[in-house]
Image (cartoon, rainbow, N blue to C red; front, side, top):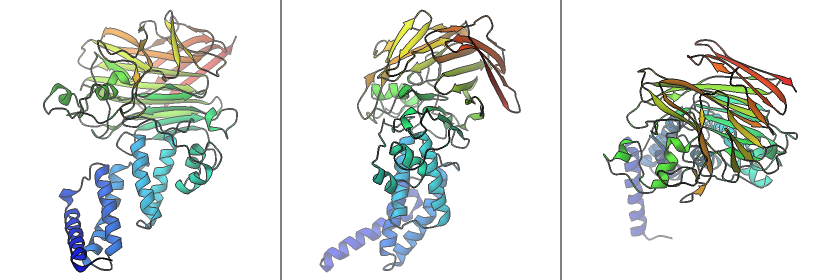
Length: 485
């Protein structure tokens, strides 16, 4: 179809492109941009390998690079290292396309691809939307049964995206991604075949690089009784480059748009904030995975996990989550400044934008449509001070906002428990589905090291007594007993 001049021009252009891609200096190995470069190199090389030694070399080089980049971008447990389940999905989509087109055929890569998809299945909410940690939009993954079977390899992904119509329901329980840096717990409702009835909790304990990393160390998200209860801030968009050397740039922000700055901030996530500062991301060594220990009680369904990291070079921060799916969630944070400096510590929580929250003396009450009980929130240790409710505020600083997609931001409720002027402390917040909730502040206590504690409260079910022990070495011990009313 082409004359010789046009054919020669296109071929010489392709040879120039191949020469450019052959140089490692031109490949962005550190992020997904380089991954797409290599995908293109593979496609180009295979198409013309029989016509040009240069193109055959490109194909061989592309295969080696793809293995290298998969090992670099994904942890051995299959989790993408760019802190974003949506980027995990996007990069895997390209890998799946390479496999489906026959560009990738070797058994080790095919096995790793399946591991990547299995890991991704743990980052799908029961409402069939992707968990929006980091730079992830609130993306729906809903597919019709035939589409689910053609797009996904694993029965777990097919189950979640099809609403249980195809695939198979996974077993309940928890999964620790020790290299990737996440812990996920999920439990079926009355009908395991209906994803909407499942409970879901995820802890983010990952810091692999600056790429797509928010100031969100040890944040969490929670879905239960058909609703996103505790939510991440979202992405908002990559808008307005920061000026090098500016205050925002020094604080780790690559983008200057105020809403983007908010979505990256520590106070926009379900974690601790010290003195109104963001956790550092620039000029600090990433810790990889902060996940320490985890466990579950098969008889009661209780699941728990512990993570620990250091902030600002001196503040040790350990987070313990104890989860009774469909009933209650305990979030316990211990911190200690090794330099003895005093701090104001705020334990922030952000509620799904579709839910209403009211203050009830020292507690918060979240109304969940369809639930027979409200969700009550209370501090189990008496030193913590509850804040007022925040909702869609811009002054003196933004608080109480959630972004579902590019350039979209809506109000949602936020609140925190605070400790003032302390060098070390413990915050223990309980979320409980109950008409009433009565913490026992006199009985509840945690030792100074945060290693051992006991917490007691009364709700509609009766009196709960929870004891935990975080030994310096060995297993994490958590036990909760219920005395019915």
